[in-house]
Amino acid sequence: MKYKIGTRGSLLSVAQTNWVIIELKKKSPETEFEIITIKTKGDTDASPLFSINQKGIFEKEIDRAVIQRKVDFAVHSMKDVPTELPDELVLASIPKREAANDVFISRDGSTLEKIKKGATVGTSSLRRAVELKKIRPDLNIIPIRGNIESRIRKIGDGKFDAVVLAQAGILRLGLDVKFEKLSPEDFPPSPGQGAIAIIARKDSTTLIELLKKIEDYESRCAIEAERALSIFVDSGCRFPVGALAQTKDGKLTLRVRVYSVDGNKSINVEKTGHSSLAVDLGKQVADELAKKGVANLAKNWREKVEEWNKK
Figure 1 (cartoon, rainbow, N blue to C red):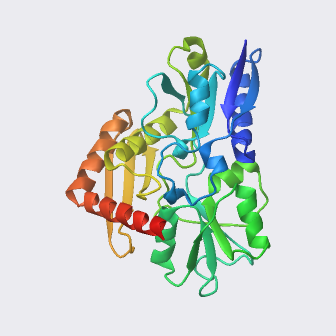
Figure 2 (figure 1 turned 45 degrees about the vertical axis):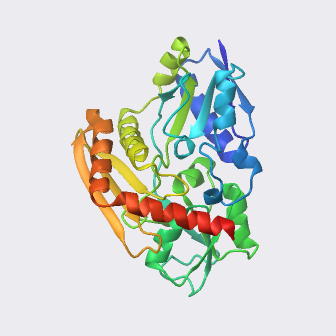
């Protein structure tokens, strides 16, 4: 049996897909795989992410190829996958999650606390921008796009003093780069950060059975809770939400933080439930956020983004 895998052409996407292949080969040595790279809107549009009013910019074209049977399944970074999939598709497998936290990489090795006043820091994320400003309001936060290697290279080129990235990407690429690990308490990550999503057609029964063999139960529970939360608060590039679910002793704890546009106000919610009821936990946290006024924060964020995009 041979399967075609759709993914983006970035080094990270290909590295993630090769990792998936290695894990699948452990379960089914006789099965063959072929990587098919596909360009997405996110690859061709260099605009800041918050200025692109479309969901799934890094995966839509790839998932369409799965639906059209041009490829058999797709490998994505989980945080790029919209919470609602086309009817033909299913989130078939979630392998063991890599580190979910962010990292701070600077030209001279300075930490976020020690870097010079007014330093220029690059990030593609509104969430990271507001978290940075909360801790260091003096910093000059500039949108940055491109793959992980090019973002790091821009530090060496002198275009930025530092950048903030997901640690998972650094680890999966095996990059030898010095970084400061940012605490999830201060920098709660995007829902799904650090996890891989494997998408397949619902009718691919035999394939899904194989993909399930590399699923990690605890990672599935955590991601389901985070994605359930995202559905009900409609988080995304235009409304930043930090959320991380973690399991311990069969219990799942979901911690969420949402900031106001100026970063002066935040809503924090933490709830614990049974791992098997991950989706319910996500809904409960979303309900608590609603009671605390998350709708107003979301409205303010989207209005602010529209204002920025008109400039």
